[in-house]
Length: 250
Image (cartoon, rainbow, N blue to C red; front, side, top):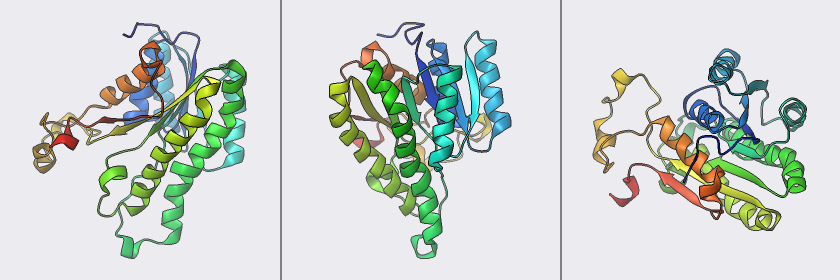
């Protein structure tokens, strides 16, 4: 069961939080009472808009520009968050690169760019916030995977590999960090509506494969993240939670 301000006193760092699912997660955690560090690599205006929306609703938020593939930039960002908002208790690893390219045309640099953000970036972020979580004896780490981590996708060998790696990282970290009071879970979105409402019926073939017969909303991922970080998710760790409208039972 969730309560309105169940995350009061918590500090959440959400990577890639300027738009879409990351934005929804930042807003949801703030609505639950957390102070939110809104991270983006380059979308400053959008990130500032997210932080402004949180503050307008009575919450606390600040924007941090950093490329999470850069270990030094991550350390600086996390030090700034700790100084300005407090020790990070919740880390949501949402940042990723979503580009489609056939494997036969994919360069190693393109492969590495995706790995650098999804896997290396997650490594850097966890390493940076972990000392504070260990000292506090509690914390939540949430990774964001996706359907391609399980069934692959044409043109997405790099992202499928990276997201599969995140799921494995989640399970391993959960085992290692559980005794320290730190829970680690993965949320795996299915097909989500990140476009304008006018475009919601533009992909009927996808709808045909989803028992709920619609695309998901970013707010539904955000609600799942909030649950996992709250008291209701207190005995859940090492899990991959699929939020896909039942697509994997069809």
